[in-house]
Length: 173
Image (cartoon, rainbow, N blue to C red):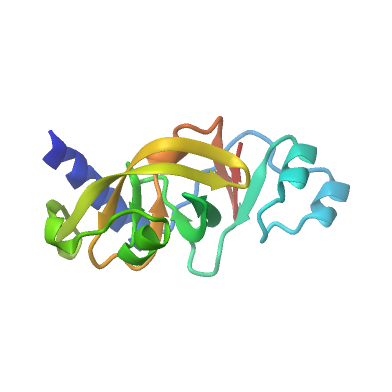
């Protein structure tokens, strides 16, 4: 069962990083013009701004097609790719160490298969991740060998009220 879970993680990881995607929603995404002018889409909202805009965080799609979030992982600032196709949060070894998560490469095992072959890592529990004040505690994650950028996957995203994409924006609520 665990092997299948990690296979899904690895597949989501490979697909999420290799393929930009877009979801079109019927829900309105444009804030009133005064609010839009007050907060450029390319920067995460401060907690005060998030409250003023109904608790939304707007992330701009970057030139490589991905959305990035400035998060606090166990209180440490870490930049993650928001990967709606990843079933869990996946951390680089460096980011895990910075967040105070014990990393022992000797514990790494093959946990799935990605586009470039076997994926090695080990499961961890992350005490807390916060993006723009949206904190989730005690989440499952993995530390992956060779991962270049950490991924914010479904173990975090599924605990938010809403994750929506439209055009070049991702909205977290």
